[in-house]
Length: 156
Image (cartoon, rainbow, N blue to C red; front, side, top):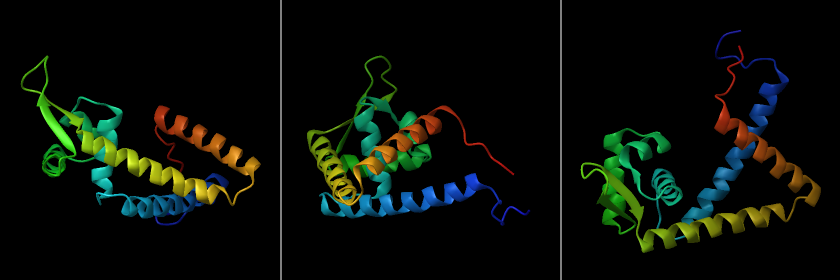
C-alpha cells in the first residue's frame, strides 16, 4: 500500500467518518463566528480562546498552542491589540517576557462567540435523539482525553 492509498482498516473508516462530522461541526462554528461581531479569522479566534484559557500566557506558549511561528503570532497579536481585543504587558517576574491578556472587549467578543457556537450546536442536537446525544458526548470526551494524552498511532 502506498501512502496515497487509504488503509483497509475499520479504524481508518471510522476516522474518515469522524473527519466528515468534524468538517460539519467546523462549518457550523464558522457560520456562528460570522454572526458574532467582530469578524475574526480562525487563527485569531484560536489565539483569543487560547489567551482566555490561559491568562498571562506568553508569546512562545501561545505560538505552540496555535501551531504558528513566533513572528506570525507576534504579528497576529499586533492586529488583535490594535483591534482592542488583546493587551500585552511585561511579566512581573521577568521584564523581558511579554504576557498576553484579553481586554474587556476581547472577553466579551469571545463570550458572545462561544454562546453563538453553543446555540448553533444546540439547534442541531435538537434533531438528534437524546440517547445518541449522550453517546456522542461520551465519545467526544473519550476522543479529547486520547488526543490530550497520547500522540496518534500511525498505523501503516
